[in-house]
Image 1 (cartoon, one colour):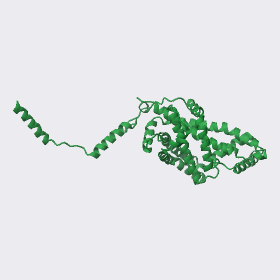
Image 2: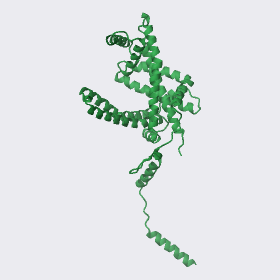
Image 3: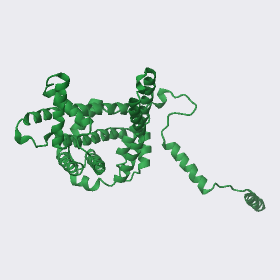
Image 4: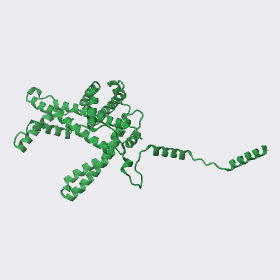
Length: 359
Protein backbone atom coordinates (compact mmCIF):
# COMPACT_ATOMS: atom_id res chain seq x y z
CA UNK A 1 0.00 0.00 0.00
CA UNK A 2 2.84 2.36 0.87
CA UNK A 3 4.57 1.64 -2.40
CA UNK A 4 1.31 2.14 -4.33
CA UNK A 5 0.65 5.52 -2.68
CA UNK A 6 4.19 6.68 -3.26
CA UNK A 7 3.96 5.66 -6.92
CA UNK A 8 0.76 7.66 -7.30
CA UNK A 9 2.40 10.70 -5.74
CA UNK A 10 5.41 10.46 -8.00
CA UNK A 11 3.11 10.03 -11.03
CA UNK A 12 1.07 13.07 -10.10
CA UNK A 13 4.21 15.08 -9.49
CA UNK A 14 5.61 14.06 -12.83
CA UNK A 15 2.40 14.91 -14.69
CA UNK A 16 2.13 18.17 -12.79
CA UNK A 17 5.58 19.10 -13.90
CA UNK A 18 4.82 18.21 -17.52
CA UNK A 19 1.62 20.25 -17.69
CA UNK A 20 2.19 23.87 -18.62
CA UNK A 21 -0.16 26.29 -16.92
CA UNK A 22 -0.97 29.23 -19.21
CA UNK A 23 -2.07 32.30 -17.30
CA UNK A 24 -3.38 35.42 -19.01
CA UNK A 25 -1.35 38.57 -18.70
CA UNK A 26 -2.31 41.38 -16.38
CA UNK A 27 -3.42 43.61 -19.25
CA UNK A 28 -5.72 40.93 -20.70
CA UNK A 29 -7.22 40.18 -17.27
CA UNK A 30 -7.96 43.86 -16.68
CA UNK A 31 -9.47 44.13 -20.15
CA UNK A 32 -11.71 41.10 -19.64
CA UNK A 33 -12.82 42.35 -16.22
CA UNK A 34 -13.59 45.83 -17.54
CA UNK A 35 -15.46 44.46 -20.57
CA UNK A 36 -17.58 42.11 -18.45
CA UNK A 37 -18.28 44.88 -15.95
CA UNK A 38 -19.18 47.32 -18.70
CA UNK A 39 -21.48 44.83 -20.43
CA UNK A 40 -23.20 43.93 -17.18
CA UNK A 41 -23.75 47.53 -16.08
CA UNK A 42 -24.78 49.14 -19.35
CA UNK A 43 -28.43 48.99 -20.32
CA UNK A 44 -28.85 48.22 -24.03
CA UNK A 45 -32.17 46.63 -25.00
CA UNK A 46 -31.32 46.74 -28.73
CA UNK A 47 -29.29 43.91 -30.26
CA UNK A 48 -27.26 44.08 -33.46
CA UNK A 49 -28.83 42.46 -36.54
CA UNK A 50 -31.96 41.60 -34.59
CA UNK A 51 -35.37 43.18 -34.67
CA UNK A 52 -36.26 45.19 -31.55
CA UNK A 53 -39.77 44.72 -30.27
CA UNK A 54 -41.56 47.27 -28.16
CA UNK A 55 -41.88 44.82 -25.27
CA UNK A 56 -38.08 44.48 -25.17
CA UNK A 57 -37.08 48.16 -24.97
CA UNK A 58 -40.10 49.61 -23.16
CA UNK A 59 -39.17 50.65 -19.62
CA UNK A 60 -41.66 51.60 -16.97
CA UNK A 61 -41.51 55.10 -15.53
CA UNK A 62 -43.87 55.15 -12.54
CA UNK A 63 -43.69 58.91 -11.93
CA UNK A 64 -46.61 61.22 -11.13
CA UNK A 65 -48.52 62.96 -13.89
CA UNK A 66 -47.52 66.16 -15.63
CA UNK A 67 -49.92 68.42 -13.71
CA UNK A 68 -48.80 66.93 -10.41
CA UNK A 69 -45.19 67.46 -11.46
CA UNK A 70 -45.81 71.13 -12.29
CA UNK A 71 -47.64 71.98 -9.08
CA UNK A 72 -45.34 69.84 -6.92
CA UNK A 73 -42.38 71.91 -8.15
CA UNK A 74 -44.16 75.14 -7.24
CA UNK A 75 -45.19 73.63 -3.92
CA UNK A 76 -41.60 72.68 -3.08
CA UNK A 77 -40.49 76.28 -3.60
CA UNK A 78 -43.38 77.96 -1.79
CA UNK A 79 -43.34 75.46 1.08
CA UNK A 80 -39.68 76.27 1.76
CA UNK A 81 -39.90 79.98 0.99
CA UNK A 82 -37.68 80.83 3.96
CA UNK A 83 -34.83 79.19 2.06
CA UNK A 84 -35.62 80.17 -1.52
CA UNK A 85 -36.72 83.78 -0.97
CA UNK A 86 -33.37 84.95 0.51
CA UNK A 87 -31.56 82.93 -2.12
CA UNK A 88 -33.61 84.61 -4.85
CA UNK A 89 -32.76 88.05 -3.44
CA UNK A 90 -29.04 87.18 -3.36
CA UNK A 91 -28.90 85.95 -6.96
CA UNK A 92 -30.94 88.92 -8.21
CA UNK A 93 -28.43 91.30 -6.58
CA UNK A 94 -25.53 89.35 -8.08
CA UNK A 95 -27.16 89.36 -11.51
CA UNK A 96 -27.82 93.09 -11.34
CA UNK A 97 -24.24 93.84 -10.27
CA UNK A 98 -22.25 91.55 -12.57
CA UNK A 99 -24.56 90.98 -15.54
CA UNK A 100 -26.71 94.12 -15.49
CA UNK A 101 -30.32 94.89 -16.20
CA UNK A 102 -32.01 96.54 -19.13
CA UNK A 103 -31.46 100.28 -19.21
CA UNK A 104 -34.59 102.31 -18.45
CA UNK A 105 -33.86 104.74 -21.29
CA UNK A 106 -33.67 101.88 -23.80
CA UNK A 107 -36.93 100.51 -22.44
CA UNK A 108 -38.62 103.91 -22.81
CA UNK A 109 -37.29 104.29 -26.37
CA UNK A 110 -38.55 100.83 -27.19
CA UNK A 111 -42.06 101.77 -26.05
CA UNK A 112 -41.95 104.95 -28.13
CA UNK A 113 -40.95 102.98 -31.23
CA UNK A 114 -43.79 100.54 -30.50
CA UNK A 115 -46.29 103.41 -30.32
CA UNK A 116 -45.09 104.90 -33.61
CA UNK A 117 -45.20 101.49 -35.34
CA UNK A 118 -48.73 100.83 -34.13
CA UNK A 119 -49.89 104.21 -35.45
CA UNK A 120 -48.28 103.59 -38.84
CA UNK A 121 -49.56 100.01 -39.21
CA UNK A 122 -52.98 100.08 -37.59
CA UNK A 123 -53.72 103.76 -38.04
CA UNK A 124 -54.63 104.05 -34.35
CA UNK A 125 -53.43 103.08 -30.91
CA UNK A 126 -53.48 99.29 -30.44
CA UNK A 127 -54.35 99.43 -26.76
CA UNK A 128 -52.41 98.98 -23.55
CA UNK A 129 -52.99 95.23 -23.25
CA UNK A 130 -51.71 94.45 -26.75
CA UNK A 131 -48.84 96.88 -26.23
CA UNK A 132 -47.87 95.13 -22.99
CA UNK A 133 -47.93 91.75 -24.71
CA UNK A 134 -45.73 92.97 -27.55
CA UNK A 135 -43.36 94.57 -25.06
CA UNK A 136 -43.04 91.31 -23.13
CA UNK A 137 -42.50 89.19 -26.24
CA UNK A 138 -39.99 91.59 -27.77
CA UNK A 139 -37.88 92.11 -24.66
CA UNK A 140 -37.62 88.38 -23.99
CA UNK A 141 -36.96 87.24 -27.56
CA UNK A 142 -34.46 90.00 -28.38
CA UNK A 143 -32.43 89.56 -25.21
CA UNK A 144 -33.43 92.91 -23.80
CA UNK A 145 -33.29 91.68 -20.26
CA UNK A 146 -29.69 92.71 -19.79
CA UNK A 147 -29.24 95.32 -22.46
CA UNK A 148 -26.00 95.24 -24.41
CA UNK A 149 -24.24 92.31 -22.74
CA UNK A 150 -20.47 92.02 -23.10
CA UNK A 151 -18.36 88.86 -23.01
CA UNK A 152 -17.59 89.39 -19.33
CA UNK A 153 -21.30 89.72 -18.58
CA UNK A 154 -21.99 86.45 -20.39
CA UNK A 155 -19.31 84.67 -18.35
CA UNK A 156 -20.75 86.05 -15.12
CA UNK A 157 -24.21 85.01 -16.29
CA UNK A 158 -23.05 81.39 -16.76
CA UNK A 159 -21.40 81.41 -13.33
CA UNK A 160 -24.54 82.77 -11.66
CA UNK A 161 -26.62 80.11 -13.43
CA UNK A 162 -24.30 77.38 -12.12
CA UNK A 163 -24.56 78.85 -8.62
CA UNK A 164 -28.37 78.76 -8.83
CA UNK A 165 -28.29 75.22 -10.21
CA UNK A 166 -25.91 73.75 -7.62
CA UNK A 167 -27.28 75.52 -4.55
CA UNK A 168 -30.89 74.63 -5.46
CA UNK A 169 -29.99 70.96 -5.96
CA UNK A 170 -28.04 70.92 -2.66
CA UNK A 171 -31.02 72.34 -0.78
CA UNK A 172 -33.47 69.95 -2.46
CA UNK A 173 -31.30 66.91 -1.74
CA UNK A 174 -31.29 67.66 1.98
CA UNK A 175 -34.94 68.69 2.08
CA UNK A 176 -36.11 65.48 0.43
CA UNK A 177 -33.88 63.48 2.77
CA UNK A 178 -35.62 65.05 5.77
CA UNK A 179 -32.61 67.03 6.96
CA UNK A 180 -32.68 70.53 8.39
CA UNK A 181 -30.63 72.67 6.06
CA UNK A 182 -29.73 76.35 6.06
CA UNK A 183 -29.07 78.59 3.10
CA UNK A 184 -25.50 79.27 4.19
CA UNK A 185 -24.81 75.52 4.05
CA UNK A 186 -25.82 75.52 0.41
CA UNK A 187 -23.80 78.64 -0.41
CA UNK A 188 -20.68 77.28 1.29
CA UNK A 189 -20.83 73.59 0.38
CA UNK A 190 -22.70 73.34 -2.94
CA UNK A 191 -19.88 74.72 -5.10
CA UNK A 192 -17.74 71.57 -4.89
CA UNK A 193 -18.89 70.00 -8.21
CA UNK A 194 -18.60 73.32 -10.08
CA UNK A 195 -15.91 72.10 -12.50
CA UNK A 196 -17.68 68.78 -13.13
CA UNK A 197 -20.96 70.58 -13.83
CA UNK A 198 -19.17 73.00 -16.15
CA UNK A 199 -17.69 70.09 -18.13
CA UNK A 200 -21.12 68.48 -18.56
CA UNK A 201 -22.50 71.88 -19.59
CA UNK A 202 -19.79 72.16 -22.26
CA UNK A 203 -20.78 68.70 -23.53
CA UNK A 204 -24.41 69.86 -23.71
CA UNK A 205 -23.36 72.94 -25.69
CA UNK A 206 -21.42 70.72 -28.11
CA UNK A 207 -24.55 68.61 -28.55
CA UNK A 208 -26.37 71.80 -29.64
CA UNK A 209 -24.09 72.11 -32.69
CA UNK A 210 -26.78 70.64 -35.05
CA UNK A 211 -29.15 73.42 -33.97
CA UNK A 212 -26.42 76.04 -34.51
CA UNK A 213 -25.80 74.62 -37.99
CA UNK A 214 -29.54 74.79 -38.65
CA UNK A 215 -29.66 78.48 -37.65
CA UNK A 216 -26.73 79.32 -39.93
CA UNK A 217 -28.27 77.35 -42.80
CA UNK A 218 -31.63 79.07 -42.30
CA UNK A 219 -30.11 82.55 -42.40
CA UNK A 220 -28.18 81.64 -45.56
CA UNK A 221 -31.34 80.16 -47.14
CA UNK A 222 -33.33 83.31 -46.41
CA UNK A 223 -30.68 85.59 -47.88
CA UNK A 224 -30.30 83.49 -51.05
CA UNK A 225 -34.09 82.90 -51.42
CA UNK A 226 -33.47 79.16 -51.30
CA UNK A 227 -36.82 78.54 -49.63
CA UNK A 228 -38.78 80.21 -52.44
CA UNK A 229 -38.92 76.92 -54.35
CA UNK A 230 -41.38 74.44 -52.77
CA UNK A 231 -39.12 71.41 -53.37
CA UNK A 232 -36.12 73.08 -51.78
CA UNK A 233 -38.30 74.22 -48.88
CA UNK A 234 -39.39 70.61 -48.32
CA UNK A 235 -35.76 69.45 -48.36
CA UNK A 236 -34.80 72.14 -45.87
CA UNK A 237 -37.74 71.19 -43.63
CA UNK A 238 -36.57 67.55 -43.55
CA UNK A 239 -33.03 68.70 -42.81
CA UNK A 240 -34.27 70.96 -39.99
CA UNK A 241 -36.35 68.17 -38.49
CA UNK A 242 -33.37 65.79 -38.47
CA UNK A 243 -31.09 68.36 -36.84
CA UNK A 244 -33.64 69.17 -34.13
CA UNK A 245 -34.33 65.49 -33.42
CA UNK A 246 -30.59 64.77 -33.15
CA UNK A 247 -29.92 67.59 -30.68
CA UNK A 248 -33.05 66.77 -28.68
CA UNK A 249 -32.03 63.12 -28.44
CA UNK A 250 -28.59 64.00 -27.15
CA UNK A 251 -29.69 66.78 -24.80
CA UNK A 252 -32.36 64.64 -23.15
CA UNK A 253 -29.69 62.68 -21.29
CA UNK A 254 -27.30 65.61 -20.80
CA UNK A 255 -29.91 67.55 -18.82
CA UNK A 256 -30.25 64.61 -16.46
CA UNK A 257 -26.44 64.36 -16.34
CA UNK A 258 -26.31 67.98 -15.14
CA UNK A 259 -28.43 66.89 -12.19
CA UNK A 260 -26.53 63.65 -11.58
CA UNK A 261 -23.08 65.23 -11.66
CA UNK A 262 -23.94 67.36 -8.63
CA UNK A 263 -23.71 64.24 -6.44
CA UNK A 264 -20.54 64.15 -4.32
CA UNK A 265 -17.67 62.20 -5.87
CA UNK A 266 -19.29 61.61 -9.27
CA UNK A 267 -17.12 62.36 -12.29
CA UNK A 268 -18.49 64.03 -15.47
CA UNK A 269 -18.14 61.08 -17.86
CA UNK A 270 -19.58 58.68 -15.31
CA UNK A 271 -22.52 61.05 -14.86
CA UNK A 272 -23.07 61.17 -18.64
CA UNK A 273 -23.01 57.37 -18.96
CA UNK A 274 -25.28 56.95 -15.94
CA UNK A 275 -27.78 59.47 -17.27
CA UNK A 276 -27.73 57.77 -20.69
CA UNK A 277 -28.56 54.41 -19.09
CA UNK A 278 -31.23 56.03 -16.92
CA UNK A 279 -32.91 57.65 -19.94
CA UNK A 280 -32.75 54.59 -22.18
CA UNK A 281 -36.30 53.96 -23.38
CA UNK A 282 -37.63 57.03 -21.55
CA UNK A 283 -36.52 59.91 -23.75
CA UNK A 284 -39.89 60.55 -25.39
CA UNK A 285 -41.61 60.79 -22.02
CA UNK A 286 -38.92 63.15 -20.76
CA UNK A 287 -39.19 65.33 -23.87
CA UNK A 288 -42.94 65.63 -23.28
CA UNK A 289 -42.12 66.79 -19.74
CA UNK A 290 -39.82 69.44 -21.20
CA UNK A 291 -42.58 70.64 -23.53
CA UNK A 292 -44.90 70.92 -20.53
CA UNK A 293 -42.18 72.87 -18.70
CA UNK A 294 -41.84 75.35 -21.57
CA UNK A 295 -45.61 75.89 -21.72
CA UNK A 296 -45.71 76.37 -17.94
CA UNK A 297 -42.95 78.97 -18.05
CA UNK A 298 -44.70 80.84 -20.89
CA UNK A 299 -47.97 80.96 -18.94
CA UNK A 300 -46.14 82.02 -15.78
CA UNK A 301 -44.39 84.90 -17.56
CA UNK A 302 -47.64 86.09 -19.15
CA UNK A 303 -49.63 85.90 -15.91
CA UNK A 304 -46.97 87.67 -13.83
CA UNK A 305 -45.37 90.15 -16.23
CA UNK A 306 -48.37 91.45 -18.18
CA UNK A 307 -50.05 93.06 -15.12
CA UNK A 308 -46.68 94.53 -14.06
CA UNK A 309 -46.10 96.05 -17.50
CA UNK A 310 -49.63 97.46 -17.52
CA UNK A 311 -49.03 98.90 -14.05
CA UNK A 312 -45.77 100.46 -15.25
CA UNK A 313 -47.56 102.02 -18.23
CA UNK A 314 -50.12 103.56 -15.91
CA UNK A 315 -47.49 104.86 -13.51
CA UNK A 316 -45.39 106.41 -16.28
CA UNK A 317 -48.04 109.12 -16.58
CA UNK A 318 -46.44 110.72 -13.53
CA UNK A 319 -43.12 112.46 -14.09
CA UNK A 320 -41.49 111.27 -10.84
CA UNK A 321 -41.76 107.61 -11.97
CA UNK A 322 -40.06 108.17 -15.34
CA UNK A 323 -36.58 107.08 -14.21
CA UNK A 324 -37.54 104.06 -12.08
CA UNK A 325 -36.52 100.78 -13.85
CA UNK A 326 -39.55 98.89 -12.56
CA UNK A 327 -40.06 96.47 -15.47
CA UNK A 328 -36.34 95.63 -15.96
CA UNK A 329 -36.01 94.77 -12.26
CA UNK A 330 -39.13 92.60 -12.40
CA UNK A 331 -37.79 90.78 -15.45
CA UNK A 332 -34.49 90.11 -13.70
CA UNK A 333 -36.36 88.66 -10.72
CA UNK A 334 -38.48 86.51 -13.01
CA UNK A 335 -35.39 85.25 -14.85
CA UNK A 336 -33.73 84.13 -11.60
CA UNK A 337 -36.95 82.55 -10.35
CA UNK A 338 -37.30 80.71 -13.67
CA UNK A 339 -33.82 79.21 -13.22
CA UNK A 340 -34.75 78.03 -9.71
CA UNK A 341 -38.04 76.53 -10.89
CA UNK A 342 -36.40 74.70 -13.82
CA UNK A 343 -33.83 73.22 -11.45
CA UNK A 344 -36.53 72.03 -9.03
CA UNK A 345 -38.60 70.60 -11.91
CA UNK A 346 -35.73 68.57 -13.38
CA UNK A 347 -34.38 67.39 -10.03
CA UNK A 348 -37.75 66.06 -8.88
CA UNK A 349 -38.12 64.07 -12.09
CA UNK A 350 -34.59 62.72 -11.66
CA UNK A 351 -35.32 61.61 -8.09
CA UNK A 352 -38.53 59.88 -9.11
CA UNK A 353 -36.69 57.85 -11.73
CA UNK A 354 -33.77 57.15 -9.41
CA UNK A 355 -35.98 55.94 -6.54
CA UNK A 356 -37.73 53.41 -8.80
CA UNK A 357 -36.11 49.99 -8.52
CA UNK A 358 -36.33 48.07 -11.77
CA UNK A 359 -36.72 44.32 -11.77
